[in-house]
Image (tube, rainbow, N blue to C red):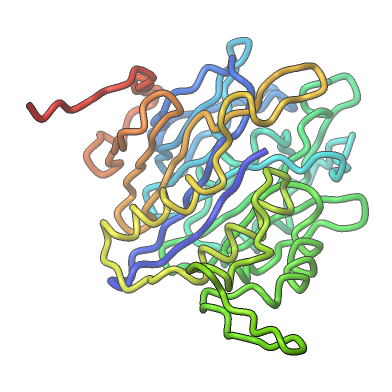
Length: 329
């Protein structure tokens, strides 16, 4: 589960923002991987050095971590989202290609590329591998939203039939089905509008809207991936974007709050509750990572440019999971 959007403010700042929806238990911390940091490619047992410093949210499990989203020092941003029951990964390495585990692709993208255009060329040499004896890799069913400092944005999907990079036409990504299915599904909501409905006459009865907001009748409100895609697309493409940098940040959080999951509302068959563990908003142009957590809605900010980027070890930031209230009297 997850919802991600891209947005541009009137002063030409580009944002990638996302909700991270999952069950409790994951160890989450924002991490900085400097330029000389090397990560272990478990497929080859070789350490691979980073070209660019990366800042983003890390998810740790059994001593291994992945980046759920992030930005590099050149302004390339990326987020990984679930795509259940859609992926077919390679099970064999190809010597002349870049062989990467599916959960390492986010970091591979951010550590090695500067723009979407450059990445699209790099994807031609990518082999995403899930060995038959690696249950974690086999269970990783995902796709990626990538955007750069010019606003260029793509959705990357590897399915049973294709390996594609879609131009991100509506600035939204959720989960299954595939991205092209969601675009087709939007056609069902042609009637939804930000404008108030007109009066109409049925027989001798004059029908009038009895409150504001009738134009939005039919907009879905449940938490399924298709409904979140529709609602986020409508909001993202109808809000007033005549806002500056700070306004762009606020609109990202407001849109994502409208599709955020509250504890107890989305229950799995094993009685676990999906919640929006955190919401992030990344500015490509400033390389600043903004985020809030489920238990602390205050917005925190980490500026990549203020860090020393020439190190070789990871730096982690404390995760703000305690509620902070600003008393005014």
